[in-house]
Image (cartoon, rainbow, N blue to C red; front, top):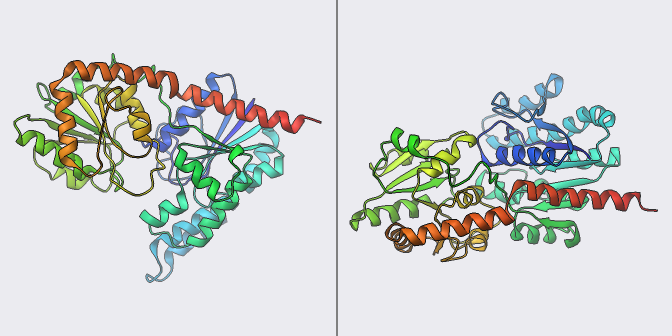
Length: 405
């Protein structure tokens, strides 16, 4: 099968360190491992010069279109700063579908697989022009998320485009049940929606990985390490995590907090007391070593809000047979079976999280048992290759229906 993989998000680099870039790379590798031919087209966002080992072709917004995209930034200071970025995304969608049409007309893909991004309608246009099925991967309700966290200006336009794109796709691949419900509310028919949570490369994330070098580098030898890996964004409740670690240490069970990731909270965390060690962002290939250096991995989320996420680092920690403690919310509570594959705590309750950390530290047999069960579950249900096989089935079904008399 020939697959055109499209990502028009100017904030995603196929060679980046974030979870979005990891998702792109791992799905492409999984498709290819199944024998499919994949051409990858990505936007010209920040960081395109980073390492890219999947052969992504950059759709550069250049020439007159590139100049026009920069013009809103020169408007009066009274305009919202985000408006120019939204304008650029809209212009890029139109530019991308025109720029890609000749290349894809020559390539003749059997299907187009697109990672959905805000204002990105190029996949819909290309699928209709080439008469190819469009499978749309949805990782978040982006119009709602942008309104809540990024200062979206063109709110009605973003919401209406999102609705139309969801309804136009031949199939939606969403990462959570909450996103399935969201897409249904926008008008996507349930039979076109498939839930596929984030996966993991179980061969790379395995219990045999060593964390010795990481422990030595950050002076953690002999310490009991509580770890967090992820973006340092508002939805990750790092305040509760820090408070819980202080409670454990003040109670005589001294622990160190190792935070791996980048984001708005990094500077504040680095100013914290000596119980917090910040590694910053690391290459995805190095994440197993950091997880291996942790005695327990915490997945903190605040109470309330949308629970549409599919925590990538939770699956990776479980694949490494690490004891995990997660907030009892969203997909975390679906994946972690309390007392069997990990422990759950009540969101926003540092005392409850501290109690769970003590349970893991003081009962190594329980920690080992939960870790082994966690890896078994992940390997059976949450791999990138398994996700690619399911998408393969969906794509083949769409093609068969089109070819039927």
